Image 1: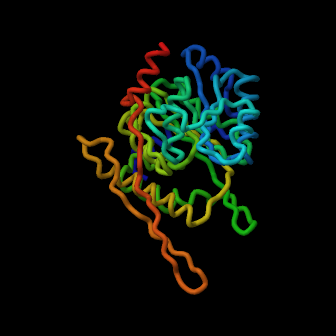
Image 2: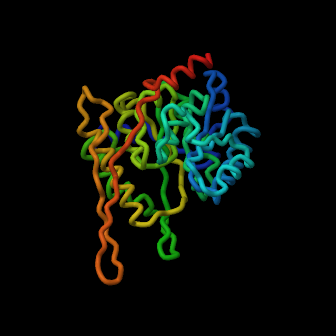
Image 3: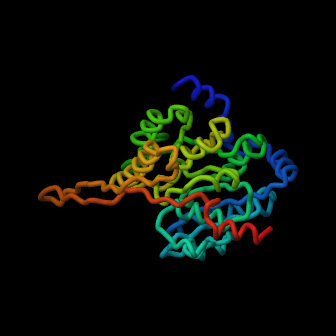
Length: 329
């Protein structure tokens, strides 16, 4: 790791692996002192098995018991199961992604839900969490908020954690995050070595100031996390970024084929930013296909899948969003 990335890691990474490590009363005092409002966003598509438990815990702990969070919003991306009904019954505000900013149309992908969540929430501090988490994550929200509430210079906070991997019924203490290790980390270290201190650049748990999030584009698919990290580096500078060790993250795992598509979209996102000219800051990468092979018992069968990135512009450039903000003042 280059010296500046190592120094950043040591100085800007804090530990919040359990509630015992977090001074919740101090966070509440900082929130009130700063006049902040906090929104927690969970993007979800067919997460009926896990979203209810997550929402129940978040609402009970951080809305009812301790008023740290002002709203818990589930962004439902065209779920075909009971995700919306379960999340609503658990206490979340459920918003259909397709219903937000109707003048902008709708697109598939997690990044689309995150982008539209800026128009569906009210907090000046926004916490994002995936909806497929399986372990106790009650400390994630206060952990991610801690750097934002403690230091006004911090605009974006990434969570990091160990990620157990289940293989053939055996659980390894680490080994999850294969796309991170095989794709994202080598690319980031080569192209933006100052970001080498981020342990989980693709992790789905992070928080930011609305004022920063509004200024960057959101990739609609799997490249959203790496895109945000690189773009917010340009907006906030390295001192404006922080990291919190949240302990362990357990979630469902995807097939190798699905991980290949994810990696393809991440490569497209990274290449678009690496090639981006100063006069064309939000250029989307050219189209591309990922060819994969499956064996049908007789031979290999190729399948080509689009992995070109699509992205939404910064919210501050969307008239429909800006008009809504003005009307709310």
